Amino acid sequence: MKYFDYAATTPPHPDVIRTMAEIMETQFGNPSSIHGYGERADQLLRRARSGCAAAIGVKPEEIVFTSGATESNNLAIKGSALRYQSRGRHIITTATEHASVYESVMQLQQWGWEVTLVPVNSDGEVNAQQVVDAIRPDTVLVSLMHVNNETGAIHPIAEIGKQLKKKASRVLFHVDGVQGFGKMEARPADWGADLYSLSAHKIRGPKGAGLLYVRSGVELTPLLSGGSQEQGLRAGTENVALLVGMAKAMRMAAEDQVDFARRSTVLRDRLMETIRVIPEFELNSRTEGAPHIVHFSYPGMKAEVALHTLEQLGVTISTQSACSSRSAEPSRTLLAMGRDAACAAGGLRISLGDEHREEDVALLEQALHQMVAQLRPLERRM
Image (cartoon, rainbow, N blue to C red):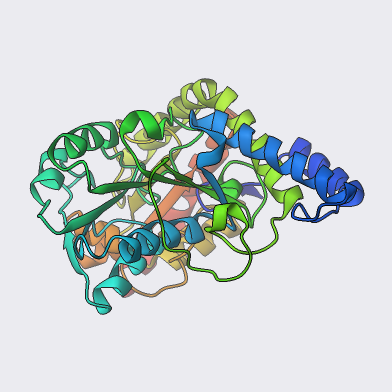
C-alpha cells in the first residue's frame, strides 16, 4: 500500500522516534521542578524552543508550545479576540480556512463578534487589497492560512502583512503555517505576522506537539487555567520528548525545504498532467500552488467510493482534509471557489511526502486509470 496523504499526517522520521524514545527513557523529569531531574528536562525544553525558533527565524521567547495546530489556532484567535475586545470585535478571515480557524471564528461570532469573510477567486486565492479594504476601525484580527490544506492554493501572506501594517498597525495578523512550513520559506516575522501556528505531525514529527509564535509585545488571554507554563499562556506540564522531537523534525524539514520543493514540484506536475487527460476529472489545484498538493474532483462519483476503490488498488489518498473527511457535507473550500455541489462533493486530494519518487507516482497514475475504468459504469447511478 502506497500512502499519498502527507497533508493529513506524516510517518514520524526514524531519527525523531529514536530521539524521543531516548528522552522518554532517561529524561522523564518535570521541567518545572527545581531538582536535577527537572533541571535537565528544562534544559532540553530550552534547546527545543531555541531550535524551533531558529527554524522560522524568531526569538526563543516568542515560541509557545501547544498540543498541535488546532490548539495554536484557537489560542491565537480566541486569545487575541478576548484580550483586545476593548479595541473592537471585528475579525477578518476567509471561508476556505482550516476547520480549527473557521470554527473558532464562527464561535466568536456566536459570542457577539462580527466576522468578514473575504472572498477567494476560482483558484482559491485571496486578493491582498480586498483583505486590507475589509479593515474597519473596530477590526482586531486578520487570520489567514499560508497554504490551503485542500487545494494547495497559496495566499500572498507577505504582501498582506506589509499592507496591513501600513494601514492599521494595531490589527493583529495571524498566519496558519501548517501546510507551508518545510515546503516553502517560512519567515513569519519578515511577513509582519504577529501570530503563526505550526504542527509537528505534518513534517514527520510526533502527533500532540505544536507551537504558536507570538510576536514580542502581543498579549493573549490564556484558554487553559492552571500553572504558569509557557509564559502563562498555556498551563500544563510540557511533554519534553514530543517537543524535542518537533524541534528535530523542524530542523530537518527546514534544511530539506529547497530540495523537497524541487522534487515534489516535478512529481506534482506529472500528476496534474495525468489528471488533465482523464475526462472524468476536474483539476482544482494550480501549478503556482504548493509543491506537495494536487486536488481534483470526480463529479460523477461520490468521493468515498473513489477513495475506497483506489485503496483496493493499493494507494491511499484522501477526501477533503483529514479533519473534515468524515463529514458528508460538500467541501466548504470548493464551494467558496465557485465549484458546483457535485464537484465539491467529489473532491479528492493527493499529497506528497519526502519519500515519494517517480515509481510511486507511476503506481498512483496506473491506479487512477484503473479506478475510472472500474467506476465508469456506475457514474450515472451515483
